[in-house]
Image (tube, rainbow, N blue to C red; front, side):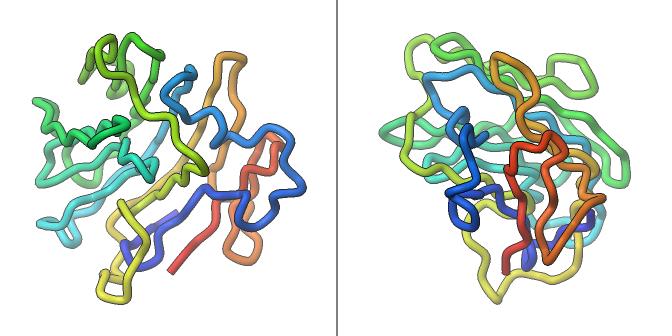
Amino acid sequence: MKISRRYPWSLWPDSICPSFLTDPALDHLQGDKYWKIEVEFEYTEENFSTMKDIFCIVPKYTGLSIYEKRIFIGIGYHDEDDWIGTDSFLEPNTVYNITYEHIPDKELLVKIDGEVGFKYDLTIRPLAVVDNPIVFIGINKHTTKEETEVPDLIMYNFKIYNDRGLICHHDFKNNIHGKSIDKTGNLNFLYQIG
């Protein structure tokens, strides 16, 4: 799925089908729970000097971005957010598999194609627990008309795991009315916004 900053995607199923969900994936993306997000993607050279936001969890920004090939990690605490530039670089027009694993009160572990690229200690300051989190893919906030319509991110797979296993999987091959169908059957719809 080609994604532009003007037309990003969002995982916020409560906003479109709250009565269908019994165990929303977003309920697990909290600072006091184990979770892992896995993304398979590539980014293009379009808008190269613009931040490429692979995904983020808001309102306390926790996410993965690329700026001029360098990976940046967002870590959202209760009182503020940290924005950390890593020593890892990714080339445009290359498919990568990145896992972003949260082990509560211990660490945040980011793997690039199976190799540890970033490890962050959470023993002193854990991630935030928030009401009604939202996941954005392709942008780090609600979209505006000023954003470019040129696709600069290609997402092949987006997955969320909890301590019991896979609870959300999108390969963007089954889309209906701007919504990607969750392959797990859990009704965690991703939908295009903008």
